[in-house]
Image (cartoon, rainbow, N blue to C red; front, top):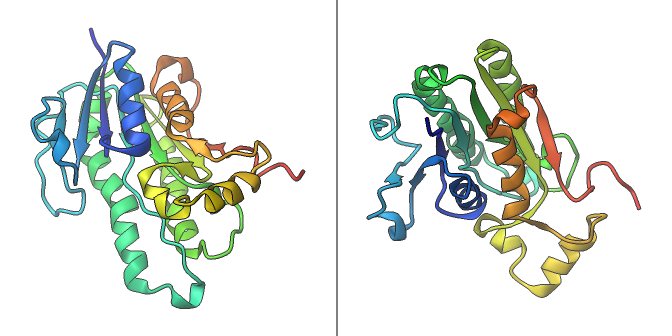
Length: 231
C-alpha cells in the first residue's frame, strides 16, 4: 500500500523541495498552497489558508503516514520596534496553524503503522542573534510543541523539528537579494555557503520514513556549522 504524505505549504521553497523529493520515491504526496495560482488546477494541490477559523480537510486520505508543516515567516527587527501585533500574527501562522492541522489529523496518522510529523524551528531559537527576538520567540514555541507532542503521541506517532540556518528560498529573498548579502551570509557559516532548499528537504524526507523510526522528540539542526563551530 502506497504511503500518504501531506505537505502544508508545499508550493514553494523547502515545502516544494520536499514534495519533489517524495514524488521520486513513488509515494502519494498531497500538498497545499496559499498564494500561487500555478497550482489551482493540480489534483495533488489544494488551496488552504491556515489562518482561517474553519477549513475543509476532506482531501486528506483516511490513512496518513506523515505531515510536514512548512508555513512560517522571517521578520527581523530591533526588539524596541517589535510589536505585540506582529508577534501574534507570526504565532498564529507558525504555531496555531500547526496546532489546528495536527489536532484534526491525529486520527488519520494513527491509522498508519507509524505516523510522523515534521515541524520547522530555526537555528535562532537556541542561539542568540541580533534582531531575532520575534523569530526566536515563535520558533522556541515550535520546539516546545515538538517535544510535548512527541511525548504525548508516542509510540504511534513520531514528532521532530528541523532548525535550519538561512536558506535560499523565496521566504529569505529579502536577506539574500544581492551578491553582497549572499556573500556576507555565506561567510558567516563555516561551510561558506547558505543552505539550499534541497539540503533541508533531504532531512525532512528522512524524518518521514521508516529509516528514522527510532527518532522522536528531537530538534535537528542543519545550519552549515554556524551554531557549533567557531573558525
